[in-house]
Length: 488
Ligand SMILES: [Zn+2]
Image (cartoon, rainbow, N blue to C red; front, side, top):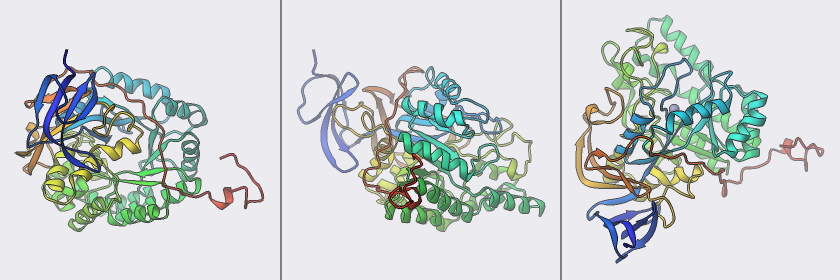
């Protein structure tokens, strides 16, 4: 009998802090040994000249999810997870969305039913909370957190999802008490509506004007308010899909003060800009997402904030709506921009874009790439007991990247259920050629190697905010508030 089920030999292995040459021995789905001359194995992969990295964890994607207006994403858990796997990922954390009136238990049951039989990679969920009733706050949410759903998202905009400031304080109080992380879509709802009305009534309804309808100031106002409200309760938050330098700066300052604030950005804010929306007819609708694409200067600023650590998380925000009546054009063939479905596909391109344009072109180190691909996400979202790095005892979730492979991006080569990609025609250097999940190849030789449903649910741990001291607001501190204890 062999010592290992599989050995990966001669590869360059990288963690979030180190790069070294080593062989990796895998047994029973786990990383069993890292070193040289490890002993015998049933199978051997020679990774000479290649990078052996942790499988990516995609922590912001919309899969088989109804939008608040009832529109279903183009990807289900099969196509979405397959596309993720071909892009070097071994785990996804999509959203399980509560719409108003729904119970969280029912929502989670629905999403478990969608993911379990179809996903080819491991998965968890973030809840979306749109209806924080007493039962949701005091029973359902604490139960979901106990069951390993330790993060959830709230929206400061969109009429059917928005929570007001008071509801945010209620939600933050529950998150603090039970150790959950609140993710926030931070944009000022009134500013967006005001601008949208002004643009449409003055005859500016074409897709490109969407980019003007969500001003940068709407993002920075809401980020500022979210940080103030969460800071008052002293609970951790993560501002998702930050698109502007002004927003990033507010996050950087809050982190400087020790607040429990994390930041995320997405490839669309680094690789695309609003000028690309200036196309004839409805073509620009393909690039409508929220927050919208900004200008070229913003792209450079977002890159800088990724380099300097203001953003710890880099996610695709994959929100696939086809360019037809099932998606972007569901309100008719020529809708004004407020009626165009928001979102871009990108789950398969997230890591190849960052590997090529970040690591291969010298903008970030290989170790920083690993942090953004997997390690930071596993820590922040409570999966680092089993995922996020190549470490003895953890799941053998590994992506082997070949820096010699170059590809020109074509929508027809991607595995999602979309007919376009915003990155069409880009030349990418380096690609994940073999992807292993718990020691089994899920992608090799450009082919999917597994059946639907092999992915498993990952219950997640509570957030660890060590090193982010925050502070107790004096009005809530019995030592200086005449002894009032609100039990928070
Ligand atoms: Zn999203």
